[in-house]
Image 1 (tube, rainbow, N blue to C red):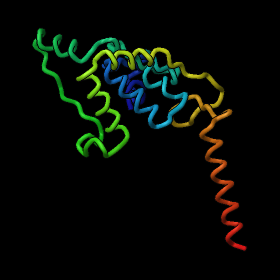
Image 2 (image 1 turned 180 degrees about the vertical axis):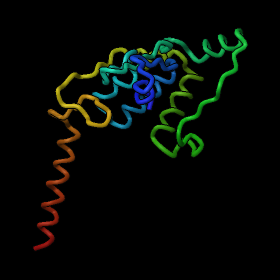
Image 3 (image 1 turned 120 degrees about the vertical axis):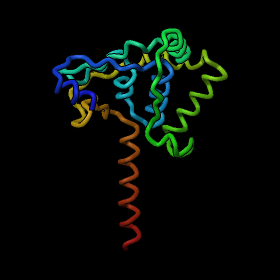
Image 4 (image 1 turned 90 degrees about the horizontal axis):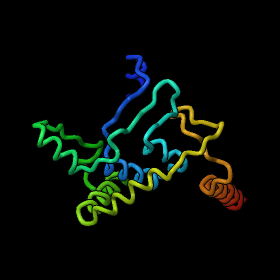
Length: 166
């Protein structure tokens, strides 16, 4: 959506206001969902999957408290944001559960969230020739344990059906 609007407006860059806790949540959600090598695209400083539009996260080193204090001292009203499905509760999705987990860590052990956020900088996307047609992320399918497990399950399912059809 952001890329499409940027293309319509002929913008080469989109700046998003992601801060460290949002990026830490996104990293943990992507790991929990098994997104593999495409994790880095959603948490790095520059998402350059699209050559025409690059998404930049210039505020990523700021904490929620720093942003709140800046807004307070400069008399800026914040617009509350919510994520899709957040009103359905913590156990409605893995994203909600992960977000709740990171929020809990932030309240009790704020330096841990900073450590999770710092790990984002160490996650680098693998550059490969094969790309997803929808999101342009690199496809990491060589020697993939996940794909091996899926293929193994298919073989077992087929052999199970053959065995029981006789």
